[in-house]
Length: 452
Image (tube, rainbow, N blue to C red; front, side, top):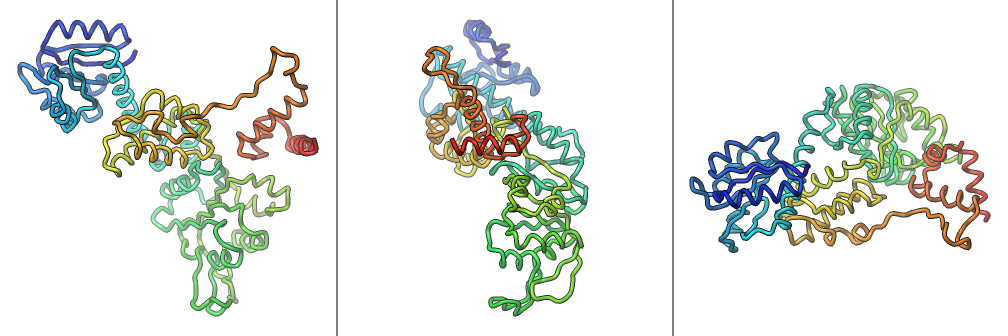
């Protein structure tokens, strides 16, 4: 079914015509002659959209619209009138109407408007459910989604939030690692103490050591004052080591010792200082491969990886993409003071089929771009960044019509493994899991391909 439409129209013949036409297009329809009667029949749980005339025998359609918007804001109202003009349209929009239709009605145009309104209603309802019906004592409001992979993630976070064990968050760039770390901290027993974040890729080894462990005045040339360091600033709380895979190899032994001994020595200091910090680390690197390549200490990897949370890429989260897009539309529309309420079906298809290599961060930027450019209250494909609006999914094709197009089994295997690595963002551990190959076998194949 397309949705449940409630019509308020004083012309019975018009009601009969609309009911017949919309039912043929899959809508459930009920109609009322009087405004007050129609208003009383609206069910906040089952009514998806109200279609109301402006001129009613017992009420003004614009006043009716205002009342519905004030008391049932999740139900969109489409206003129709035979006296369509710009002033009437502006008045309808100012009254909170979702859309404005003039008579004589074009049933196809009306159907499109109703479909968009129902989609808008459904997305609003789903977004609200996410924050109110998690089914866990913890609330991970910073994160959003009701796909199976996200429900699994919420369940896992609910079990580990109060743990004191070190947590390693992995996932592609832009998948929400920092938001996840904040959500875990805010649901832990340390939530009233600091969460301190440092990007380990943003500074050289000596400066990173000083930032983490602190330094004494005069410990090095620029050490003009004493610095307590981030470990001590986070004492009693959580220290989030973002991009932990980028910590220089020469600094890793000191970090490992601090985590094992639960005490540190500032640069230039002579005594050990105890600390009480939970460590959450994050990386988009394949640390297991980095360990094998000698770029990351194995003992430090296991110290950080007591509990591991792997964030799903956006492309695996299904209609979560549309929920997130709606959330971003609402936020940017408010920020830019524009009336943008949703997106067309064509845009929804584009958003669902695009690969999102930049994950949630890329989606957020795309929606900000679209809201800024759109000239309508609904985003259309032309408003999206060009690489998204023009996206065509990659396919691995077998040319089975022309013998000259056929390739060997080895070449087909090479193409597929290369494709999996691309989709896995060059994460060889994830690729070997998808391919069901042990990593040594995958490495040998990759070395052979490089030599071809």
